[in-house]
Every structure is written in structure tokens, then in C-alpha cells.
Length: 308
Image (cartoon, rainbow, N blue to C red; front, side, top):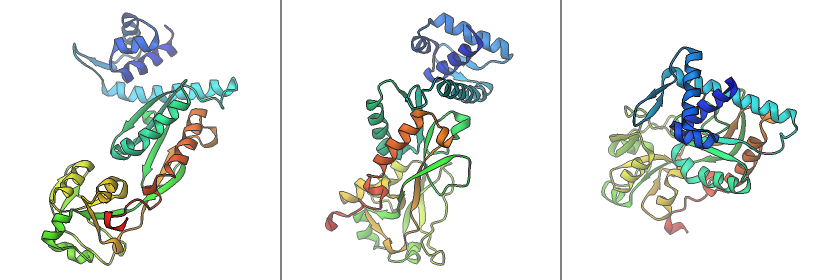
């Protein structure tokens, strides 16, 4: 097996999480795949995988090497496609990443629809509440919900999301509805923190109107935060898409509407601009059209039951 095929085999093993599954995907045998990885490790002089009878995971060197392999193989595939004149034909494997809940609710249906139109394509989706580095981690397209810094990546806007404060009708009946940010001092809340530690201060449209409730519970999962708010444990901050269903069916009510911060923009982000592979350009166009039809991304879809 030549060196390039060894790199492809290593990526397949890492993606599949095992030798047998990777062998089936590569049309090879498990012993051949095992020998290829062993030869690659001897060539590099370092182990790439930790092997046990029940599991397989990357070493630190393996994780770094995997990112490099994805980038190298992606560049090679793009170069070959350009040479043979097939840049306009989507092919290969499309890799997409997005925030976890947004990915499940809005990106996954788009991706499935795209695959239905392109049966020759494969796809890899990674939904997680962290910033994924597209180039280093080998992803083609990312959904970013944030104000974007300047970078070499291409960004296509698809909408924006309101930042709202919500609470259950039961909680508001027991504790009253805050009318201004200053009223939050007398309220309980559910905080959010990526690392499970302290959460960020509460901010509103007017920075001179501070308000901070008592966060009796801090979580690192958006669905838990919303569920706690529905159960009456306090106020919660959320992006509009995280509470659309709960507001529409009356489990949550939006408060402090007149004090909301500016909406957060949503973009599809990808490298290479006009030189992006056909699979990327096709998916971005497909996804942008459909995401722009999602009401909550256009500032709609958060009407309470009594308002409909």
C-alpha cells in the first residue's frame, strides 16, 4: 500500500472508530488495514492510535496528524478535481459542523435534503457547542451564531437570532414579571456556562441598564436550561431558536422584550471562497436558501399563544 493510501486508510480508521468498519468502507480486509496503520506508525516513529480489546482512540500525535491528513487529502482532491474539470460536480464526503441544538433542529434536515438530491455524496456532521476550527479539524462548512471576526474564511449571512429572556407562566405568577433589567435583582435564574463554572453577566440593549438575577443553577447544556425554566426554576436567557416551541405552546413567556440586545447574526462559513469544491458551493447555496426560510432566523415565530 502506497503512502497516500496509508493516509486515506488512517483517516478512515479514525472516522469509523475501528479497523473492521474502516476495512469495509475501503473495500479491504481488516488485517490489511491493521498492517497499513502499523507501517504508517513505524514510518512516523510514533503511535497514532491507542488500541484495546474494546475500543480505539487517537493518541495526541494521532489527533494532530489526523487534522493534517484531512487538510492534505482535501487539497489533493480539490486539485485533482480542478485538473480533470469536475469542479462543478459535487462528489466525495461533505463535512458540516454547527452548534448542537441548532444543528439538530435546523441543519440536520437541510443536510438530509441535500444528500437526497446528491446520492453520490457522503456526509459527516458534528454538532457541538464549541468553535470548531474548519481547516485544522477538517470540516468544509460551519454554522456560526456570533459576530464574526475578520478572517480568511468566506461567510454567507442567513439571518439573525433574537436574544430573549423567558420564564414559565407559573414562575411569573409566583414572583411577578420583571419590567426593567433593574427588576432582575429580585429574581432567580438559570445560568449557562460552557465550562460549568460562572456564567457571563446579563446584558441588555442599553448597557446603562444593568440587571443581574440570582443564578441558583448553572448548566452547560441548553436543553437542560430550557427545561429548568419550563419547570419554574427561574428566568433564563436564550437565543430565539432554543425556545421557539416552548413559547409557541405556552410553556414559556418572553419578558423584557423592550430591553433585548441586538440580534446575533447567523452565517454559513467555509474556506476557499470561489475556489471551494463543488460539494461545498452546492451545499452552501442549498442551505442558505432553506435557512433563510426559517421564521426564527428572520425575527419571526416567537408569538405567544394569546398573540396568534
